[in-house]
Length: 363
Image 1 (cartoon, helix red, strand yellow):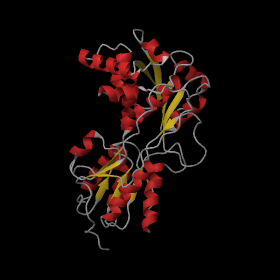
Image 2 (spheres, helix red, strand yellow; image 1 turned 90 degrees about the vertical axis):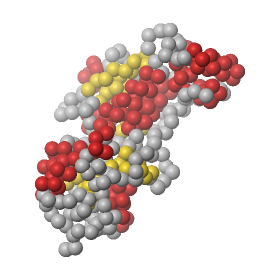
Image 3 (tube, one colour; image 1 turned 180 degrees about the vertical axis):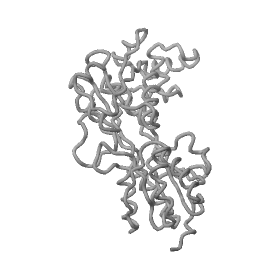
Image 4 (cartoon, one colour; image 1 turned 180 degrees about the horizontal axis):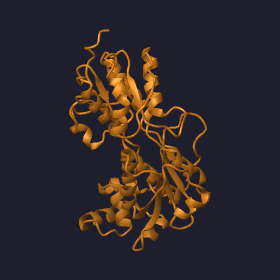
């Protein structure tokens, strides 16, 4: 566990939209079998489905637990045994950004454990899809779909997918206005996480926190931006203008050059870690010492964040868990006897070297 690892000061888990009422679930579930056998429910699923990648001793233990508890797999699960894998399609507009890529990885891992094959259909980020295009992207009519709807093309796809298609979506946390869709959805609490990161910087004595935001195409005010504002307002701190930071190190660097040249700017929160990397470069060129007279925090905890110089303070989000949750919701649409998905991990602030007490500017 990294030094300075802090959980959010709340017991709330990341939220998920509720799947339709399933009804009729058996008294003994796959999770009961897993507990009895001392294995994961994914392992039980592999045994039920005849997956070869299970040790004989484990298989025998699971089979004994099934017999002991009188568990009877749902007919849809039995149909998978010894046959070709079922399939689903993930629709997304980007597989390069960390959040989308990690969510996709979580979907694929959970789907593979349940003997589902996964196809990926990548939308054009610069154009909104139409209904005919979406139908053409599915392997077959009615194929199950998970939409990663973090941006406008994804939201559009979620709204236009045919009514006869089982669909679950990963979305930005709802703002309390009209929901993106009535279909099952899962999300991470970006707003709460951004507020916590901002409170961390204010708690170090900084008078205010400047924010380099990601482009938002799903709401008037993105949830990370709203969380930053929540914390500033709760503290009675000044609210600087939002700076559009883009998505990449280059856009973060270009957006930050003027900002960090101002010595009154002592704390910057960035919409993601790539943007923060650009800010670190701009600060170095401006002669600012981090964290001596400028603190910089990122978002997402990409693998390279711990190896930047200085190592980046950031907010870790459970994108892979979000992907697993999405698949779990979809699996329950297809097979009501399948286990409910586990909740995602809470967002966590990872305090490293790039943030420190305010002490330099006194103007």
